[in-house]
Amino acid sequence: MESNEKLKKYLDHYDAEVYTSYTDDGNCSFHIYREDTADGYEVFIAKYKDDSVNIMDDLYYYEHDLNKVIIDKVHDGETIYVDDDLWNDLYMEDEFVELYEEEYEDWNDDTE
Image (tube, rainbow, N blue to C red; front, side, top):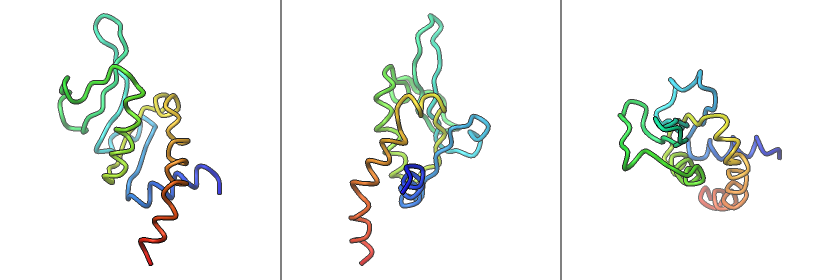
């Protein structure tokens, strides 16, 4: 099975969707994207679409911290927008393929 098929099956299992095109961000309840600070630093925002940015809860200095956020939101069944470059930089498809391979046998046990 190809990696994109494993990703789709994983998302389907959790009734989640992930979009990486900015043109689809309006379809998503949760957004993860890059921003620049006034003094030129790159930070990462992970928040619900209609919420204001809460510095304490929604702002990340390190992009690698977002892997867990993305996985948690998938497990919650959210429809997520993740900036395309960020998705690729985090190797999220590979991450979900690994999770699929770890979990899919348990899914079959749950249905029996």
